[in-house]
Image (cartoon, rainbow, N blue to C red; front, side, top):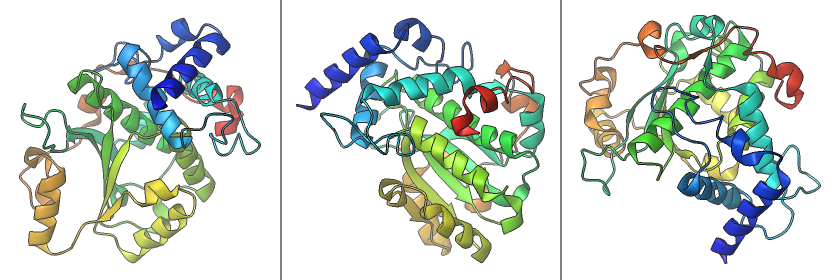
Length: 301
């Protein structure tokens, strides 16, 4: 049964990963002491994490080929848990350096707000967190920090959703606005592939849907390339938002809590990103600390 597979994986993680309990307690979502920080592993959260990994492993009873790039010949099921634990220890996705703040000073990517849900009566507070990507307002300058800005937003979003749902959900929806986007604004495709690899390896089953808005021909070109390196399951989560104002409004209001729909998309939200406010009360790190993983975990370099 699936419950038995969850129990077996939990036992394997504790028995085969050195100092698992103490190490996992030091790598919470949103970072130690961060805003809306939530434990990465715990009684309920640990089970939820295991289910997410087992789902992407197709509920395998034996060896698995996930993570896909590392386990082509098969790995023990606990390897994926150990791999992510090592990633969180070395990458520290919650770390905010001066270089990251500079890269995301315009707010091309950030976590804000939450989606609607039919299953929650507390003003939809249980809805998936929202990650916003405005591809046309920034051209990548530092590819390493460009990736970190993304990963930090995802880590923050998962922590926020877990915090609001008492550890029950931990998912996010992504809104990608392609207004003004050009191909030259993203770094070399090698870095895009690295970003996708991090998301696939370490955020399994955290994504709800991806809303694609105002996609110009250059944006569609990049999307076509990215589709080739993401899983079928992720491709099926892509939703193209109609250009028709009434149809767009209807779709957005069904997926985004009204107060967070930007005025530019027919809503009432006048939010303007402020890097000082957004990164206030986060874990500060030096520029060097945010690039150490290139040597200690070259797989993600």
